[in-house]
Each structure stands twice: as C-alpha cells, then as structure tokens.
Image (cartoon, rainbow, N blue to C red; front, side, top):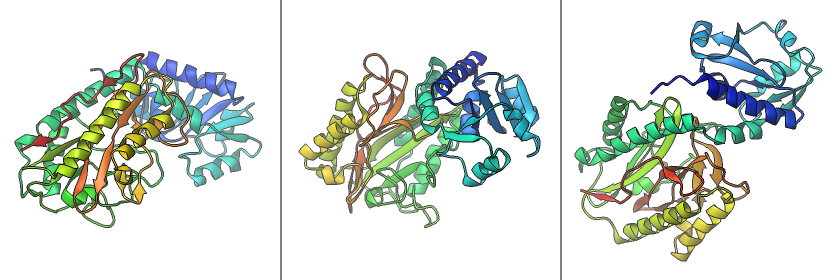
Amino acid sequence: MDITTPKTEIGQRLTRLKERLSEAGIEGVLLNQAVDVFYYSGTRQNSVLWVPVSGEPVLLVKKSISQAHKESVLKDIQPFPSSRELPSIFSGIKRIGLTHDVLPMQHFNFYRSILPEHEFMDISAINRELRSVKSTWELDQMRMSGHMLAEAFGKIPEYLKAGMREIDLAAEFEYRLRRLGIGGYLRIRGFNQEITGIAVSGRNGASSGCFDGPITGTGQWTAAPYGPSTEPIKENEPVVVDYGGFYNGYIVDMTRMFCIGRLDPMLESAFRVAADIQSWLIEHLIPGAICEDLFYGSLKIAADAGLAENFMGHPGELAKFVGHGVGLELDELPVLAPKFSSPLLPGQTIAIEPKFLFPGKGATGIENTYAITGQRPEKLTELSDGIVYL
C-alpha cells in the first residue's frame, strides 16, 4: 500500500475544516499538536500549521524542514519564524482557533503575548468531530492494521505456556507484531494518559489502576503501573491480551482471552454476557444511534445478569464507557458513555470492549474494532471471538 497521504485526501480535510471554521465565525486555526498537523498536512515533522479560512495553509517547521518538503503536499512550507516575525502571518485576522484540549498553557501564553489584539477560540470539538469520520483511504489503513493485528493474535496459542511470565508473553507477541509491520507505540490524546499493550493473567487482570480503561494490569513498577508484570502465567486462569495495532499512523484495538486448562465457570458465564453485549451493540451500531443510549443498553444487559458492579472495571472504580473511537489516536470520538448524546455517523470507527473484572479471580471480556456503515458495521479485527483453551 502507498503510505503517503494522498493530495486529494489532504485537500478534502482542509475544505471541511475551513467550512466548519467559517460556520463558527473563526477566521483560521493554528494547529500545534503533532497528530493534528499530520492529519491536515501529511507530515509528522515538528511543525505548526496555520489554516486560514481564506487563503492557503502555511506549515511552519521547527525540524526537519527538508523532510517536511518531502512528506507534505502543502505548497507553503517555511521555517518557524521568530516571535517578531510570526504576527505578520495573521495580518488582518482577529479570531484564531486553537485546540485547547491539548495545547500547553505555555504555548497559549506565548501566542497571547505576541498577538494581544487577537481573540482565541477553542475548536477542539470541531477538530475531533471532523477527524472521527474516516475516509475510504483511512479505512484502508485501518483494515491493514486490523488484518496484521488479528494475524498476530492468531499465533498466540503456538507459544503461550504455563510458567512463562506475563512480560514474556508480551515480548513474544510484540516481536511478532513488529515483524508483521505493526508500529511500536500508540498515540493517546488524553492528558496524563499513557499505555502499553496488556498481557495479564489471573488476579492481575482484575487489579485496579490509573489508566482510564477496564483492564490495566499491574505492570512492573509503580512508575508505570499498567501492562504485563513478571508474574508467571498459571494453568486454569484467565489470560487477557489487549493490544492496539498501529499501521501508517492508524490504530485498531483488540482483545482476546486464553486459558491453559479450564476456566472458572463464573468467568465463562461472564464472558458469555460480554459476548451478548457485543452482539447487541453490533445490531445497534448504525448511523443515528445515540452514544449514551448504547452504553446504557449495555449496562442493562450486565445488570440483568447480576454483573453491573463488575462491568467495565474494578468494582467501585468502573470505567464509564463501553466503546471508544479509534483512528490516529486511541481515544478518539465517538465514545459510548453517559453524557455523549451525539449520534453515530457513517465512517466513524469504534472499538467496543464489554469486560468484567472479579477481584482475586481475574478479568474476562472481548474487544473488536468496527467501522460504522450504512448497514451492519464492518468488523476490522476479523478473528474468532471465543475463549481459546490450550
């Protein structure tokens, strides 16, 4: 596949952005966050992107300008100017959009100091909504990511053994991911959120943790309290592997369960409830469906099974969602969660992950990434969902 973002793709993105800015009465947007700059310019070089509603965008590059010229389709690419020269770029402009959700206060204060007569508007919601709807080209990148990730998951039974440590399982899995062409890191927009892949077993799967997700693992250190530990994997315990695929910048998310021996009947029963929730969600992942309604519908299924207190996290510390958007970042829109009243749109991509945690016993559940279409959603992580017994 051609990994370069097509010129037509960038052009369509900029057109939609300008239309939304114009509707909001904003004369241009100054994008600072690397993924946003990449989305609208085609390069991840250390840059700031100015997109005026009227006129051509300007890419202001800190490093490397030679690579930016090779990677970006934009015509106007310049070295990042001095603080005395920068204001001239905004001549005649009064209202400038910024992404307040990710812009450091230090950067905001800098712009405010050199542009004291300008009004700064938050365009975070506009940007995230635009990026949530994927084009055909973007979906192709995500299909490739899902294909390779599913292939790696399918090989786990070949090397998963009792006695190997969680970190050994993660290392074996990640080795195969990289050999297939999956990137080695994921991007997260949320402040103070960071994560590695999760390969956890037994009670570690049901530990509470700082990451805003249902399963975190204990990790190896208090400095990074998530992911696999050095604990050995035992027979007759749940093994949960939760990883994101990263291909050409695009992420899909996937979880599968394994067991060496037989699983506790309570965990098996909870897995069937998770599968029922996933099936219900698939039927309702259609354009126009309201995000929070899908969350509450999932919660009702869990509650009817007597598992509401274990749904989506450690009891008392539940993650308040059952699905999250994915794309260039792991935590995109839409989110199937309370207070998200927006409807699903064709082209949005979402990972749904109904999971249950039982302290002292472990975790159980499933996760797949889907693309919203006009009809039944397209599964991007195509692999059998059932628990794999070894």
